[in-house]
Image 1 (cartoon, rainbow, N blue to C red):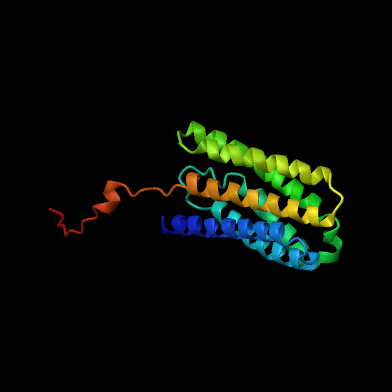
Image 2: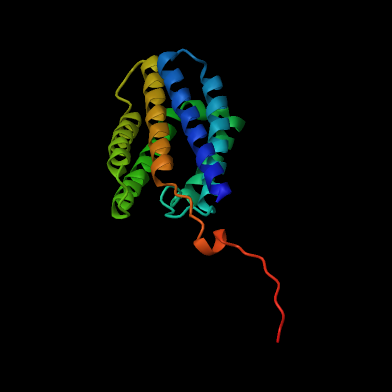
Length: 194
């Protein structure tokens, strides 16, 4: 149980880091693409690792991490590629970001529907943000903008929305199993066989 609580906290912290990184790219679009690749690579490896740990966690409903075995591995591989080959990745970075956010948004869409079936009250917020994330992912794939600054800003906005998706999914769907009354009332006693 403590591990799931800790994982929920770390997942929220990484989601906030993704939001912050996205907002920084939106506000300061003139940052070097090499720096962007370095930061994205580090965050992707960390985020993918958390996804893998979450997949194998003791989360009660298993909604936040239900697709994260494959997504965790994919995210780690993407992070390693960003760190190892930044020059080769820079040209396709917006497309990779668009594909990743689109896939994750569609999976979060399913998470929101599953959360509704479990009776979770805030399922609609995950749904709304995942629809917005999917739309931004599609825009990143179509790349209807000419300017590199606009492209970096769109990538930042897309990352920020993806971070919000993950933050909401983590906060509203990661549930820690409660102890049973038998576990809480552990009584030690001596006995003799008659």
